[in-house]
Length: 157
Image: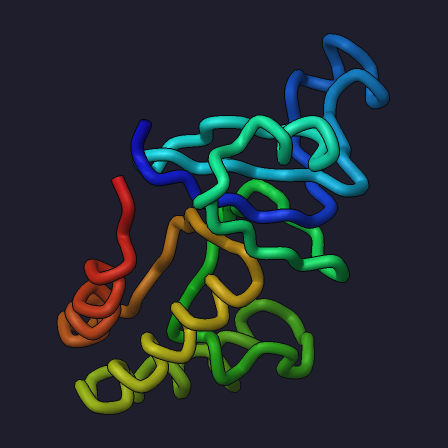
């Protein structure tokens, strides 16, 4: 058996579509759960009290009693160049674009600026549990290059 690693925490994950089975049957929640990984795949998932006795003695178990493990979140539309203008005053769309968005996005012709924002943006996505995202850059080639370089180091296929 390959080396196992486990995380102990509250765990929630979806198991079915709620419109097909109802809300209560659409997820599993383990108040004291255990997620066990072997060879980068889920080996076991369930109540810690049931799974811990089945693991080899050398299994590394990280315990996070005040955390909640969830599947990664998916964001289907996000603009990384707008990172520094999040929460800007809402106006009519064209006024908002001309006042906030276009001036901010014009800064992304500068490779250093684009790289700094891309690094912060990617760290924030991961810090908040977003593991999959459809990300938009600007019309500037360097904005996309600045995003793709650090993104390649964290992409898992």
